[in-house]
Image 1 (cartoon, one colour):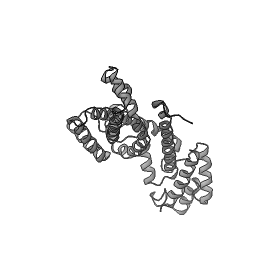
Image 2 (tube, rainbow, N blue to C red):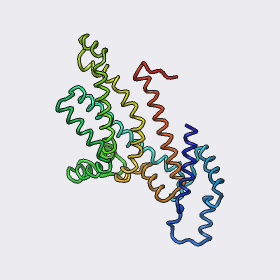
Image 3 (tube, rainbow, N blue to C red):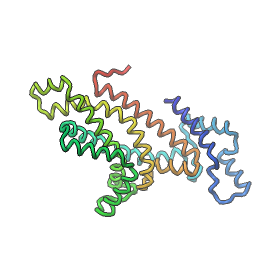
Image 4 (cartoon, one colour):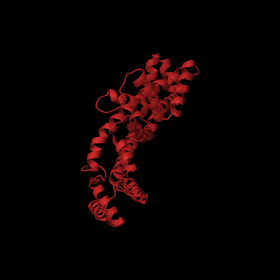
Amino acid sequence: MALTLWIVFTLSFFLMRAVPGGPFDEERQLSPEQQANIEARYHLDDPLEKQYVDHLWRAVRFDLGECYKLQDYTVNEVIAEGFPVSASLGILALMFALSLGLTAGTISALYRGSVWDVAVMAIATVGIAVPNFVLASLSIILFVFILDWLPAGGWGSIQQLILPALCLGAPFAAYIARLTRTGMLEVLSQDYIRTARAKGLRERRVVMRHALRGALLPVVSYLGPATAGILTGSLVLEKIFFLPGMGTHFIDAATHLDYTLAMGMVLVYTALLYTMNLVVDVSYAIIDPRVKLD
């Protein structure tokens, strides 16, 4: 993880500075003296190698520096304020995707070839094909302007998170439904399932305790990429629903070439993805006793 973070830091540092322009090019016309003072304050007049070493040393000490565009804010403070918003949105979206996807996939597998199976898989295909920003626009029209059930955006209550979480989690719920259906169909044909039914166990107990546990492995494998998709997908939805999360700050930092803020966001997202992949690997041993961790 340390090696990965260092590589990501190095590539991001030099790629951002290879982009034409700078963080203060959009400011009003500055005199040469004012420009020199600003560059000296943020050490932009230092050689590139020195800037790299200084930024890397601060990052090692978990000090990501000052924001170039947000006056009197450090990157650490921006992340501390935006992370709870993005985390709440991501967790709610993942809970929605898991609950809906597992339920739909299980029903589709149990009633294979029926109208329920065809309907669920058709909806899942549409859910995968429609981008979340298109779904967000349609949801705002339906649930905000027509039905007036939910607020259009903002931050402060659980009601304001419901609509963006549904839009963010819908495509992943569709993927999880397809994976659950495939896994359930494979598990339901296993000998131990037939043995459980031959013992007279109720169908609900066979499905919930025996079949579903074996069918979860493909879903668990998908949670790593799903987390990555939820994190990157939230960048657009946070702008649409006016959520003050990390995604909003990330887009602003990239647009205005705020080097330190963009770098901090990249490192946080990298660490989160690495951590989630580790959690997925460890969860294999919990779900399937046949899997051992070395």
